[in-house]
Amino acid sequence: MVGYTTYDRGVEFERFVAELLRKARFSVQHNVVLTGRSGVKHQVDVLAVYRTPITEFGFWLSARIGLSPLVRTWS
View 1 (cartoon, rainbow, N blue to C red):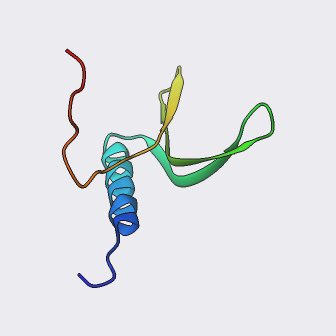
View 2 (view 1 turned 135 degrees about the horizontal axis):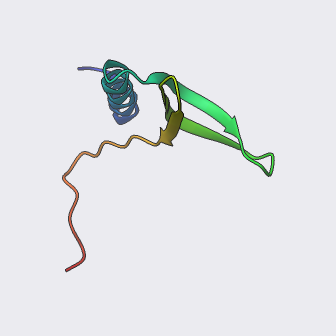
């Protein structure tokens, strides 16, 4: 596809991961900017929160997709 960059491929993968989490009943936000304790801003690809009547937990992730397979470098 003409004009389809590795950036576009990465954003498509981030959205795919976000949709998987939505189907698992997570509340999901894509491409979020969070402010850390020091005041520094951080861009997060996916922010996901799972809530039940008695608890909730969340996590953020940086989704990466490569053009070649990962190579294991340890024994």
